[in-house]
Length: 229
Image 1 (tube, one colour):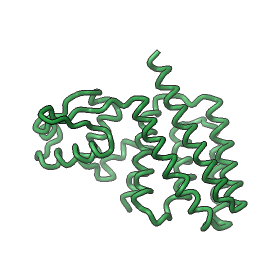
Image 2: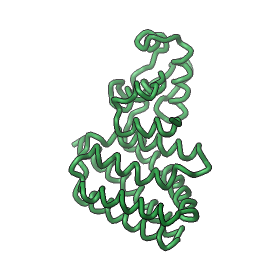
Image 3: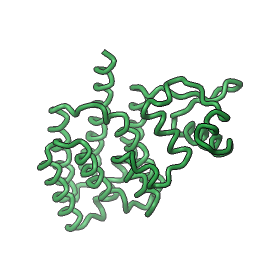
């Protein structure tokens, strides 16, 4: 199983972290996303090594990776601390995805086959039949829908970054119900995307996925704001 497939499995079932060989990095990342490690909390290497039962080197490497992804902030003479998982964090991720996903989608349109279109339609039929009745099942189906378009792309770094970002956004939003308006928009955006793929309209598909990503990010931010109130 490829690393991308492992990460994809973990997106919709965090309990599988051991099954996919969770690393120290993945454990720390999940602690931050889930809130088990609080915003602005200091991350002391020796304490983390003791808690996770490892040496200090894997901890330092994990913190550097988390820093690169924006989860951790490092300050000279003060060490590492957790960056707040807030509206700005979600906005930053979505802005990156609005660059990545249209590019991946545009490429897919040029290579899509009739079989690909039929599979997208089949998955979308399942999504609509489920009608958001089970958030976990919906997330799995939605993952399969987008993965069909992205998984064959030659830029594996871009695809893996998409998987990571999806994991982060799902983890942040899993406690929020999806509004009825957002549910309707998701279904409509998927159908619009399929129509563009059928018509071999690469730019139309890229525009559709851009609106899709923007709408998802806006919905998460709105839910975060409601939670604050």
